[in-house]
Figure (cartoon, rainbow, N blue to C red):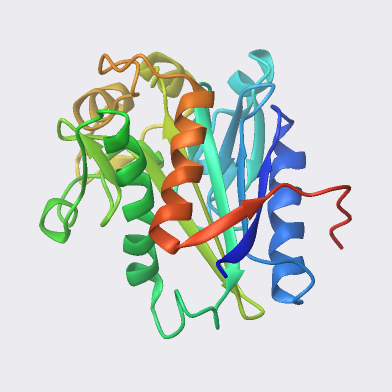
Length: 252
């Protein structure tokens, strides 16, 4: 019999609610109260999520965010800033002792999960590929997640369309990531500060337009429902599991 995992597909929620729920799921999985859990969700109002170690004042124009009604939250995972304007976010929580990931490091686990994302996009006729190590090392980076690809993240036509980050704590893994439908460089430019790279300041907008795009920007007429359904099917197929939807949940 196939292993049964939990599937949560949430309506748009506030930034703090989304991050608190991911953390609660991670804790519940770590404690053995909850099976491996895949969660799909989006954000309302728009938000910026910062990597755990990022300093908001260094990377974010907090006044511009407040004026535009954009929430700011820290993720429990690392990585760099993501503007959640028009994207679908996934999170996957499972024990480090699960046979799928036991003995695998961060990069190996990234590759495993990224394979599910790529397969889902390819099933939707999106020409998605994984960024390899040779494509990621020397590119200039600002505080924004999407200005350059990281190893085993998703590209379409050479542009990054998804970014992920991972937490390992208390014997459980939490990985979550954002799959872009639209990437608005102007919004990033207004909300995120530009890093001085060497002696040259690289405009945020230029980095983003060169290196990233949303699926709709690239001409793929997808909806969140269609993409989410493909993701669920891909995780089920790649990991040989079935999903169940829960009754009332109480994560502690």
